[in-house]
Amino acid sequence: MPAYIAVSAEELATLEGLEGWRLVLDALHAQFRAPSFSAAATLTSAIADAADAADHHPDIDLRHPGIVRVSARTHAADAVTMHDVELARTISKMAARAAAVPEPAAPQAVEICIDTMDAARIRPFWAAVLGYRESGGALVDPLRIGPPVWFQDMSEPRSDRDRFHIDVSVPHDQAHARLAATLSAGGVLVTDRFARSWWIVADADGNEACICTWQDRK
Image (cartoon, rainbow, N blue to C red; front, side):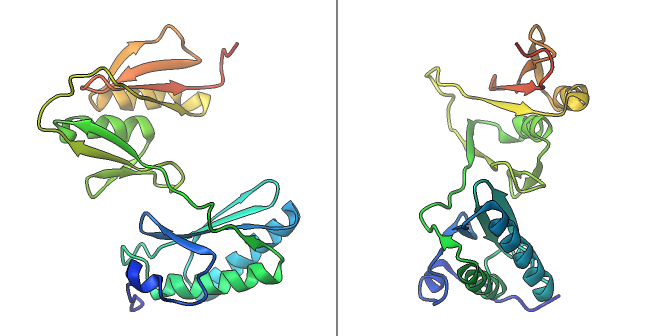
């Protein structure tokens, strides 16, 4: 395994060549706006080639009308490392040659926090209903697309009625398997009267989610 050199947030702030990048939730993020969608696709392909050459691979997202989003973090080291820094510098130079303008104000990351007095009791439910895996007490999307979920310990139950729920849209032929996994993980079926459009389920604390499909939508 390569010798990874972790870089702190303070050190990142002093390094050159990262002007278009931002550290968000322990990863380097950048967004570039290319002149066209095809130009953005060409840039994405070039980034992939550079990543293969460096044997160090970021997450890349291509969006209309010509947006390329890149996130770099060394998962093997559980940190941002100099490998990420060097790759980010290379990507910035490639973006400049492609007339893709960095948008440093654009990067962001979303987390979901659930207040609970017993995270161990409800964590399996949320892992099942989202199709996530556990990582350090939190839950993360194996594809690194959806927002992570973390659990905040409470010393006493909440007295207000603030609630939230998450809609989880899945392929129609996977809905029943997702529902079964959710119930097996300690979930409760609140109602199936909206099926096959959605099933309402809840964890042991009463926090709700909907397993949704395109079927029977009006």
